[in-house]
Length: 272
Image 1: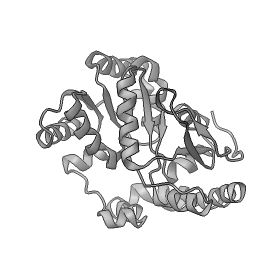
Image 2: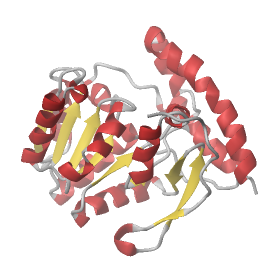
Image 3: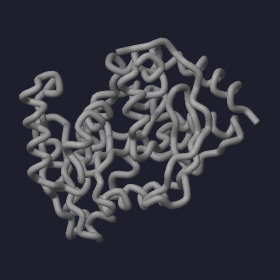
């Protein structure tokens, strides 16, 4: 179900882990992000695993903000997310312009290895879901070699379009449930991974999910990630457009151009 754009949510606070100090949030269009440092995001994700109630972590970027303007299901996923972490320099810059600075850009790809390191050190098992056939297993093998002691609960590359087939969808959920991982890395692409984790959050508990996009492809070496300097300069999209111009043109050049209007609206509503 879709709807027309609505006013941005007011800046607010979300309950902290285990009833602790609330976390500040910053609005972007119809979405929000939690104000956390990179290390704080890692700690908060591990804390979710330790609490045993399940949940899922999302990392909104410009494209997510644009899609959520007309996608109620995606907005609902963000409303219910355990953590929403900023992925994209334009969002970081906009937050500063609103006098609500964010400490760091925190993408799923950036979080993957630090979370793997913590999981290996603390005995938390991990499951890798997504990618083309064999990619999840290859990425898991590389990560296990790099992080001795890592417990790999499983790997699975579901068939394309599985989420539209109730029987296939239920089979994927069952595979993960039987493995009982503490952390589930979901590499299905947006908005599929966000909607899938939201839909099955109760069934997958106490597992904590994290959307990681193309991260397994990066680890497996089948897709090259942009250099760090391009990511920090907000130019990662240019690199990806150069790699896959046909697939990325509509996203980056056509659809995401709407972000300019959303940014102006959000800034006007929340400037100080």
